[in-house]
Amino acid sequence: MATTSTSSPRSISFWVLLGVLALIDALVIAAVPALWAADQLALMGFVILVAAALNVTYLWPRARASRWILPGFIFMAIFVIWPVVYTAFVSVTNWSTGNILTRDQVIEQLERVDITSGDEDAVTLPLVVLADADGNLRFWIEDADTGTAYFGEPRDRSADPNPDAIEDAEALGIEDTDGDGVPESVGPYERLELRDLFAIANDLENLVLDLPNGIARVQTISQVRVVESTQRYVYDAETDTLTDALQGVTCTEDTGNFVCGDTEVEPGWRVVIGFENYVNALTRPELVGPLVQIFLWNIVFAVGTVALTFGLGLSLALALQPERMKGKAFYRSIYIIPYAIPAFITAVVWRGLLNFQFGQVNDLLGNLGIDPIPWLQDPFWAKVALLIVNLWLGFPYMFLIMSGALQSIPNELKEAATVDGAGARRVFRSVTLPLLLVSTAPLLIGSFAFNFNNFVLIYVLTQGGPPVTGAAVPWGETDILISFVFDLAFASGRGSNFGLASAYTILIFVLVAAFSAIGFRMSRNLEEVFGD
Image (cartoon, rainbow, N blue to C red):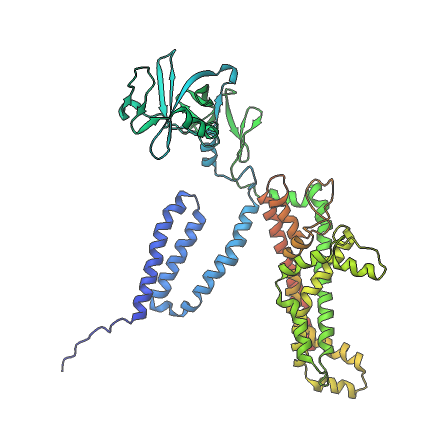
């Protein structure tokens, strides 16, 4: 008996999957030319790789097992691996305020720089302003000495020069009904009357018209001053050289900048400079001095926060552990309140409470006969204030963790120690605390890593201050490494140095990783001793 084979119909989910993949592929195909044009080759390669991986994984039967892993890996690559790799790349470049663009973009900007003659060489010419029905303006400027008339679209003084500003008035059609040589209209543009000119006088002052050999600047509503203008920097693509017409020299290149004569031209462009940022970060005296003090305070801040929150959280958990304790639910709810409020809001509230003149904390101290404390103005008290506020923010988390960890310790171990003659303190020191550390050590390490980079609290409560006056680089007494990096990258007021800030960021990453590795090794030793 003959049999016929028929292919089983595809399920709806297959066609939905196929449609999603087709949409992703279409977006990638559209994005690749744009990324190529923007010189984002690394990002383009990553997008192509992700699209290829999705197609292979979801369309090739043998890759079925990878379908559940691939989405998580893609998100990890986007939000974890890519930022780290990109930061590492920036750290080996000269990326800063004056070196943000690419070389081609710098050349394009420099070619827009003009040399203009002074006002003493300017020529005053009559101005006629015309406008169409939509309010678009046009200038008519006539030089009687040369018999040349210019008709074109003006631009704002701050805008880039417009080489196509001059239009062909004759092609549009010139109407001069009274024969005085001044047109009443040019195409759709009608000559404005005096009352209309006064209405837009303020706008006219900011307009210029680019002429073939100069710039016409509005002086009054009926006059312009024409100054000669020529291109200063000329780039020759064949020889790959830039010439400064003003100085008459050929410019050289020096680490992301053109140098014309004795002048370094700005802007510059991004180039890879190797480990220069790391060398500067660790050797320049104006950076090393603050770095050592900031690092020491950073360690004190992170370790102190973990120790204080751990101690208070554990103490509260122990206080609520006895079975005969009443109102546990109420007390636990109260202790959780600081944890439920966003840390950003809490820090803002504490900043008001610690105000030297109007804060409630100093008011309370005054009622007790204590002089007001400059919580946020004095270096020592600012550090104390940070530890107090961070204790308030962090103890609820430790309280929750310790409450659960205490309940997981078998009562039989405590009872056995009691039978052997150990008192309550000895039981806590020899049984409870070691077992707590075994189960909570990874969390303590995580808390240390978080507080080592606790930027939000520093930024909101003290902004890193009080500032150190006279320093070569901006930093404050309560700055930690991450807030110091932020000042270098964004808030210094002396330009942003993204390359140097990225180098510091990578160093911080290495420090946190090293501290975490040491902590996990110590926790593993605890498990070997007390885990059985």
